[in-house]
Length: 294
Image (cartoon, rainbow, N blue to C red):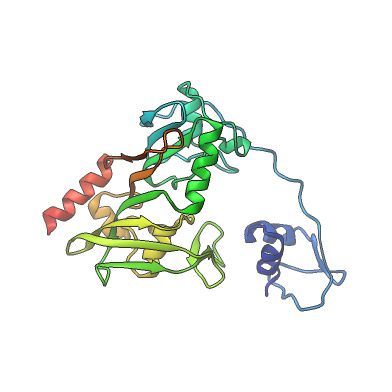
């Protein structure tokens, strides 16, 4: 394997990080400095000088326009996340976050979890809108984390994908791992974690299909990666191969993907609850254009 790919796998670091370390002359194989594209061989002695760990990311209490609280009680806050908002802070992200927006609005959330993601039990991509839940109490955090791990949460997404999936109702069962060449992407790979997506086409148009998706697992970019692997990427998802011409015609500047409904056993009462998010204006307008075109 290449130095950057092999050490990334061995050390659990991103390939980009390892490549930067190698470019700095900090990777030695049998005492000789090597570059990121050199090859590793079995039995070699590896020496690598790692950079200092990054400083912890802190939550900035900054108001987030468009962040709507759908429901709140002593245990949970259910929100409707707008586009362009991350769930929590992360290195390199300087934009608005859900946890920062909740803090700015005076909402208390659980203190369980890493400092920058306290109360967070699941995430949505920055470019994905819709419903999500944040834990307020510590007991709710534990219960919801367990529910997501055991796959007892009903996660329903709506998406508009290019073309026409065949069959119109099915299951995509394909493991997902980080992309071997692009650190910010993911891909279907044999080395990946089990990933299962159930879908059904609700409406078919000339250029695209409107599908309902139920996630059995919850990998990063799962829906986007799975439909791209079928050659039916989400409309507007240029990262995963969508046609920019179609996206422009429909007025979409991000992936047409929306977390429509979230159902789970309430961590306080134990009752089954479900919360729904309406489509934001850009997605609703694009869907209407497709219906008009036929």
